[in-house]
Image 1 (cartoon, rainbow, N blue to C red):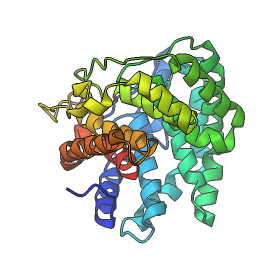
Image 2 (tube, rainbow, N blue to C red):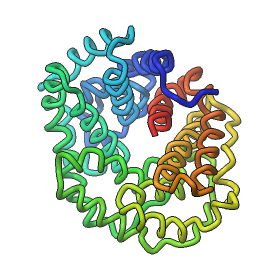
Image 3 (cartoon, rainbow, N blue to C red):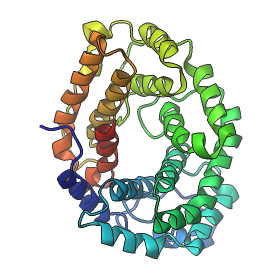
Length: 335
């Protein structure tokens, strides 16, 4: 199987995302109700991100669409993407999304997974060097600012990392947030780096007790991908030597073995396809930080390919995976 993004694959991913970003139901809300007035539907609560089964998947579904639009502007899906973006990404709709965050009951809304994906989407919009692209980026900027402010308030309170392989993983949150913060908010970028080093600089000899049954992130490899981003190359190599000292012997073996997915119609079990894709992304990021003549770079590249082989055929086919997996496949194929 080829492991590069091409126009045909981009069309496949774009078609999948277009099929769900405006599909309101089924829907799993992250919504606190303080009274009867709060009994509302997804589109009423979130006039932009009401599809894709849940808010955060809709956000990164749009990240997928805008990324593919930039990389393949002449693909057949491009006109439909622009038309839908022009319909939904309006100042009034962004203001409604911001207003939802302003409610006291929304303090923990989508923390931190949805937060970092919204900033990742904003970072992608910033890359569009066209009149339409710049206009959409400016329209979304108040929502990006609102989530950046949340990180500014939350990170000083976060004394400990979350090493889970699901939405609460803090290494993933910092890694994605840096894509936006490095350009738009130097203070937040510095805070992310400060927290990454405080949480992980002294981690040694990772045992990698994974995967768990419903993980879509590798706690071990996600941490390594974050540290690759925040450390200078030589410092990262020293850290990585101590963190996973036996990679040259392909140990811990679990990090080199794709997870088996027993039932793709089960939303939690389908997470394991995402684990294989996110591991591929992380292995590629790690390989890029190692010298070309380092056997571990070769081993990491092979591990990435093995995980992509296991997951790419299953990005589409069942809605429990299809509503989000293309985003992780795109991360892995660009890595």
